[in-house]
Each structure stands twice: as structure tokens, then as C-alpha cells.
Length: 613
Image (cartoon, rainbow, N blue to C red; front, side, top):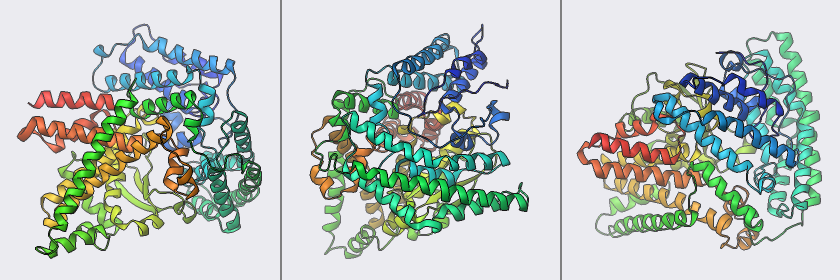
């Protein structure tokens, strides 16, 4: 791999640097070979990630050796830098036009296997970003899509999570995280400019957003020296075997000062400054996007395209399609419930056991311990997906209470670096949500671990996943897949279960399908069609409505992705009958990695059906 001496400094959400214009030199080829296409894809990936230390730390253990990336000396946390000027937008468009000019010389019909996968990924990513930056509303997009301030802590909460998941592999990593931590006071303070610009642009932050953000900041600041980052920093440094004891003591002191003098100072400044923005909009009736008119509508359309990979989707058609499906799911789980209720006198044992599951006094398979659940899933997955070449080492860790109590997430999985073989995989659990929703733990670990995200990512790594597929994957496939395998798992449990358990599995499957598709319908009503008045829900503090307002299209990957992949599964089963193989079909779906477009997933399904008829 050729070494790159110029930094391609384009952060995914940051200002694009003119230095990217020199990045294409490594991609040019007179023959436009598959190798040259790989170079183009790599350069584009580097442009997307730019100088984002956290992205590089997550995606690569040795970014310079593996990808030729040069770590810049200056590192900082994400700051708000204002909307881009016309000249900056023009520069960005020129950049994408240069990549597109190179890309047009390649033809999909000339490519096979991994090269064809690279082509499709680059085609999707290029067209997606071009459509964003060519929009007449691009500056409004930047404001509407910002997450610097949100009711779940925005980029302040993101910093704590990023700090936690940042790996110390070399002393350079320790220095980088220290420098970034030292920049947080100025970064957090800059978010007040974000709030100000929203007011100037006619889309001020709503009171529930500002007040919830202030509650989060107050919680962090009140903890003072007891805030978990202090202890976490010491632990990360103690675990850094490449540091001697003297260096560890010095770093501990520097990190303590950075968290106390910079991070906490930034938290306090932001908390105090946000008070000025309370009362700008206290009882809104419309979401941020609907209030923004045509710009908000265009932004939602772009978000749907970005998350699904479907170009030019008719959202009215999508809404109607999902509405029909959601009604069918609703009717189905109510029929199951009615069937069980009819057994109250004739088969009370089945009736009682079913409701024990519903009331969470009994868990599926009696599994409540994460380790035992994972052991079970590793075996159960053999009936769902192909075996991995090597079984990964998987462990669990827990969120800090400050984060756990404000997020709905029961768990999450962080991908390991592409160039790190035999990596120890980790699933992070939310202890607070585990207590609130114990019956969801089995399907959640299936979603995050086996055969969901963790399995799909490790499988992609084994099959040579590219950097491009890692930093520009389609969320509706990856999240849709993880939700879909929850449904398949329930079906498999039902096959050998007693009547109560089988009926509960079926009930939970349709309840899951209904729940997620219905959330997409709510989201589209709130953020696209504008026919949902949010004022009452906001006044009553309905967290889910606030989440949808602040995170438009957030449920599209989960709901529409699951709906699409589940329907592809049903189509393949129906058309192939006895020739259908669950393991083979799911292996085909994952054959192009963990994030192809939903359009490509449909094509893969059609090919699978044709091949096996």
C-alpha cells in the first residue's frame, strides 16, 4: 500500500479542507483497474473520516501502516463552526465532482466479488453526499441536523461515550485523547453559537430540548470529582502496559486536570449559557423539520435516502405501505391474544404461562444472565447463519449510570478495528434498562451480538470488508438485519416450545414488527407530513415524541429496514418452499457485508431465489 503524505482532512460532520483536492493523485490510473478502484474507495473513505481521531481509533489499530494515514498534531473535540459559506459549499461540490469524474470510468459489468461491492458502496456514498451538498437548503440542513444540543446530552454525552470507547494502543493514543479532552471547554462553549444561529435562522431550540440538556449538564457537573471519567481515565492509563509507572502517574495528573479544568468548565459554561435560550419556543405544535417548511421536507427526504440507500423513494407510498403492514401486524398479535384469552377456562396452564411472559415474571427459556444468554445464542445461531471461521472472544461491560438513565438503549455493540485480528469483541449493557425491561435482554443480545451486529461485522471482516464499507455503510440494512434476526430467533424458539411459549414468541414477533413500523409512521407524521400536533405530548413530557422531534428518521433503519428484510425473507421462503435454507439465505444477505443498500438487498434476494428454484 502506497503511503500518503498529505492529510485528507474532511471530517464527516466538519468543514472540508482544500487539502482533499490533492488526495485523488493516489487514485489515478490510465487503465482503471480494480486495484485503482480500491485506491479511489480508500481515498474517499479517508476524505470522509478526515482527522477524526475517534473514527480512526475505532476503524483501525494501525491506521498509518494499514492505510497510510498520517495522524495530525492538532486534535480537538467537535466544535460548532457555523454554517458554511457559498465558497466553501462550492469547494465541497468541486471535490465530489472530482471523485465522480474518476468513478465514471469504471463499469460494474467489468467487476466481480469484492470489487463489485466496492463499486456499489462508492456509487451510493458519492451520490448521497452529492445530493446533500447540491441542495439549495444545505445550510439549513446543517442547523436542522445538528446534534450539538439535545435532550440526551448531544455532543457532550457523545464525548463521554467516545472517551470510554477510545482504545489506548500506543502512547500517541494517550496523547491524542488528552489533547481532545483539553479542548472540550472551547468546544462545548461553541454550542451556544449553535443555539444562537438556530434563533437567527428562525428555528430556535424548543424548551424541552434546552431544559433536558441543562438537566443532563447539571447532573454531570453536580457529580464533580465523583464523575466517572476521572476513575475511567485512571483505569485506562493503568491498563496501558506500554507506559512505565512514572509516565502513568504523570498522565493521571494531566487527565485529572483536563477533566476538571476543561471538561467540567465547558459543561458549566454551556449550562449557564443555555438559560438564555429558555422561552424561545415553549409549547411547539410542529417538529423542527415541519416548522422549517420546504427545507425540512427536503432534509427528511435526504435522511431517508441516506439511511436506506433508496434513491428517489416516494415517501407517501412508503407511508401507505408501512401503514397497511402495521395494521396487519396489530391485528395479528391481537388475534393471538384473543386465542389465549379464550383458553382462560379450558387451558388455564397455557393462559397463565403466556401472561407470565407478558408480565415479565417469566423469561423465555428461563435466561436472565447475559453470559448464559450469549452461550445459548452461539448455538441457536447455527440454525440461522453460517458458522464464522473463528469464534470471537466476546465480553460484556456496563454503561455509567449518568448515561444509562437518560438513554433508551438497553445495549450497544462497538465494532473493532478492521486491521485487528482476533480482537476481543464487547457488548455494552445498560444496567438501568435491564432492570426496567428484563424480558428484552435475550432478543437484545441477539440483536447486538449473535446473530446480529457483532456476528454480521465479524463475518464482514472475515470476508475482507473495506474501510469504505465501515465508514459509509447503510444503516437500514445493518439495523434492519439485527432486528430481523430477533424475529427469526423467536420463530426458531417456537418450533420446539410448548403451546404457551410458542404463542408468546409469535405474539412478541408481531408486537416487535408493529412497534417498529409504527414508530416510523409516527416519525413521518411528525417530521415529514406534519399532521401530528406535538404540543400535548411535549407538555406531558412524552420522551419518545421528543426523541423523534430531535432525531428525525431515527427509527427508519430499525422499522423500515426490519420490514424490508423480513419481507425478503418471507418472499424467499414462499417462492422456494422446501428448497429454502435459512442459513444459506441469510448467508447470501450478508455476502456483501453488513451495510449494503436496501435496493441491493432486494437484488440479492431475487438472485438467490432464481439460483435455487
